[in-house]
Image (tube, rainbow, N blue to C red; front, side):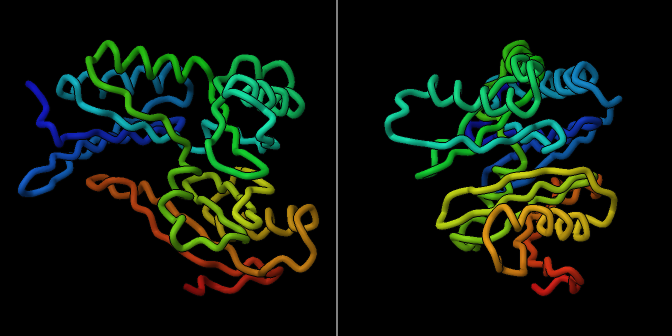
Length: 252
């Protein structure tokens, strides 16, 4: 079966699940959603993804969004004197090695294209990236992009974000926090959490604020992703929460 030119698939991957959203666009747009759970681990996840890709019509464009559980982040100083993507990626790998050691040599690293003074580097297990590429090739579909949930949430909220402020992505079991200043990223951190993602964000802000600037603002813009509805794509809710020591409930 050939895909219609407007069909597209979006795979949302977490350590123990794959959510496939196949968008059928035409006179009436509709989405088919499938969820597959698996044991936590790269091999089990890739087996689930491979099975899902095989169900798609040939040549379907596929976008993959990776849970922040599967990604590590670092900030890389940027200068126009650093010439070429290879040089910037080399600086990013050094940053990851400094924090994580030689295991960083087993990661695939990408660096964002935007930022006057800093760029955001993302690292994933090289086996995961290659497995996605091989799975798409085997299924005869087109792998259009692999993006971290952090960047997906940031881009979705970009029009509402201030040039300077706190921004977080909340997902089941993890929050990832960023601080921007005049449009540049100056901090990015991530931590596991339980159901109280608000409390986790407050704790991260309290820990990171001294490294940023004195008297930083007392609220955080949040991209809150819910994966709980079985028959619907992951739902994004944009929120604003207090990050003062005694946080209020959601304020917007």
